[in-house]
Image (cartoon, rainbow, N blue to C red):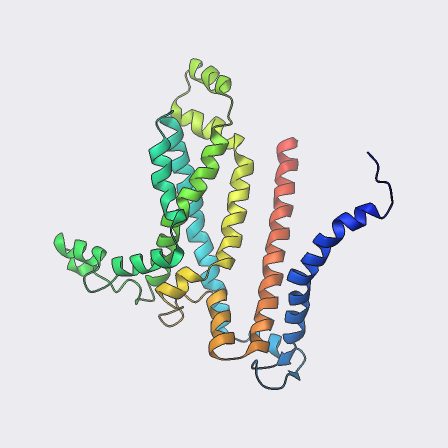
Length: 293
């Protein structure tokens, strides 16, 4: 059915475009403009050109935040995506008796992040925490640590909590994909003597490759959005060992009152995230071509 007027499509799309411009476009333009200024949020805004960007590339704490973020991404790819995929495989083998397994693994996703962060802070506590109390109980006091206060263990400790939360989320994604694998294909493979291990890695896993790619992308972008877990558990410490980009941005803007510099850091982060997204999309296209040929 063709529109009665050539302006009809524009009238239909117009409200969405205006909403996007107001919610995303204007703040983006404002942030880019502020990144070229020196402003505390209360004093007079002063244009300083590229000084904020020059400062950012010499800011060792900001560079450390990127390093911590990429380490966090690598850890969560294993603790969230890989573990979620393994859990989906185990649950799918159980047949129809999977409801309680799926609910149990998915419960952490539904809990408020602040509640989880406080709960795990008690678990990691050096004085009476469950982990250190367990180590004392089995006679391994030499393994006791101040888990969130030790620069060598703090980032891994937070990453484990993140994996505990989101492994169930990725399990749900992969489980939905595994349920779409044709039963006839699996039965034919079983008749040919394939084991459950062969079915999972040689048939199921390749058929849910698309979901795996989406899960990896969600994990990477989610790491750049992480904030509350790190802020409640460590506030970026100790000695910036768990400082990630978002915690450093919040500290720069709301603690140090350097809004212009924080805007510059936000612009750099946006460029990095968009660049990673485009690079990932390119790799996906090249992978599709390789599979096709």
